[in-house]
Length: 461
Image (cartoon, rainbow, N blue to C red; front, side, top):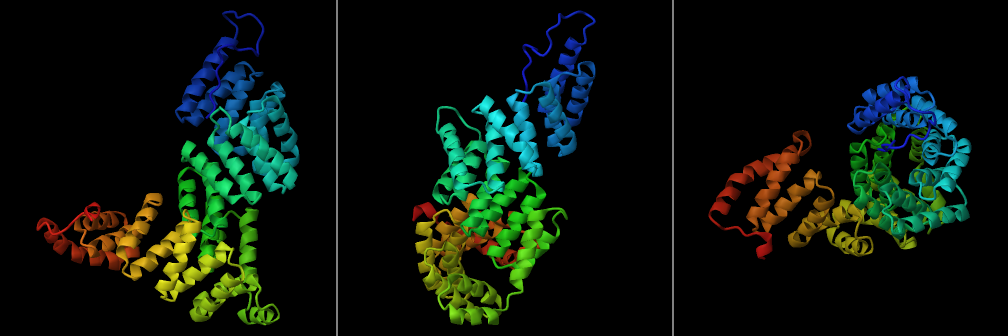
């Protein structure tokens, strides 16, 4: 939150007198900033309004009033305040950036662009203006040349001596992602989240990158963190729906999208695409495949469509798609998931090991690998994968259960007990009733084994 300092109140040049309202207005403004900083937004707005009643030409009060309204999601009131601040001080980069950013959020790009350009010209390190300009360029599908020019600016600022905010790193990541440089985008988003773990813009871009990498597990985790940080509810729905689509859960995705705001165009477009693709007839696609036997797009679509209705056929199509386009991670992950579903765990583990080496941060690949290794009773290897998942997704209750079983089978009873208890603490009865029952039956015997000093810790191996 931006708190303005008015050590010198330059907006007024006349002399102070005892009856002059300027001092009272400044006092009200500063009191309002105190409430603003403490999170009392309504109280802050009331004091900013009183200050403006005394001194109507008070751009700082207008800007802060707009910021408070924006935090309350009162965009009309925020826009009016930002416009008034710009009207009172035309060359104030902060006010220009605030108004431009809000207009970008509303989709009013034509009016936003000159405001943001002016803000950046006045202050080359105006990070809010640069972030808003990056969003504008991406949403208007700017040319590669324009994106690279903006990326050059962001790269210069984020690699300089200053400490850029998370939003700057997130904007840089978004442009790198659009330009196809996924490796750089992931590095930039890691810097953003290291700077500010609850950054809404960084978490949103992290979810986007995970979805592009065909990693629904990571996307769902970033969506959860995005929601906890106060991210837009409809954006959360879109992230979760897209993650469900990667899991082939079309019905689940449709259900989530149906609950989005009626005027959300992105949700409506995605829902339309889902319904259109869901209507595809596998038989028709198979006819197309006869003419194009190695078309990876058709093979990939059949891999998805047949996965529930005809798993053996789906496995054939998944393998064919993977063979036709081995560089496409989506086909490879789909093939591996189909192998797991077909209980061909040895082949799945072999492929997933290769995929993990290529994409070590893909949580979906790691989750499938953990499952395959667990089913093969390769518990020592499986527990390493479950630990990796827990380190990144500590709310993943099921991982504690499988990690506990792995430790139990390895005779590491203390570690097994710790993970079982953590699972019981996190698990929902409706979702994990059978697992909870099994653990409750196991705990008395496990406790006796620990007391008899028959167990060992994992680090004693």
